[in-house]
Length: 116
Image (cartoon, rainbow, N blue to C red; front, side):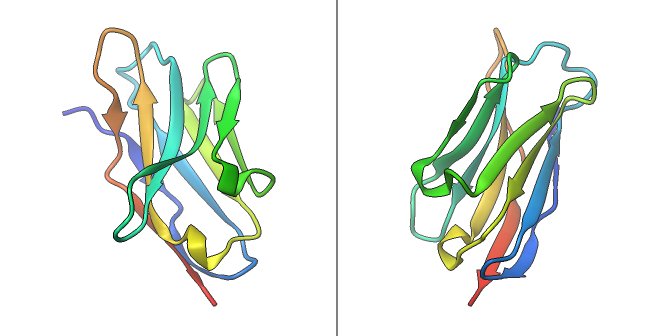
């Protein structure tokens, strides 16, 4: 079963920073885009950030100016640098990979908790 490998979640105080990473398996050679979604308890999953294979980026309104998505195309890895974290950023963060002809792939999720 093909899996995405996520890492970097944890507990941080308000105003702190975290960096998430997500790597695609080497068997996937064509990637259209990768991104991060998050889901807080009792809420719907929402898009946080997305980056295409041409480095075009999109951000959710609530994270613009605080979060930065980047990628290492050679490694098939994306990063999410999260700065000035707020309690409302607390959620499980999921990595998503989009590729042609196949269904999207999701990671298992990594917990981010921002304490007051």
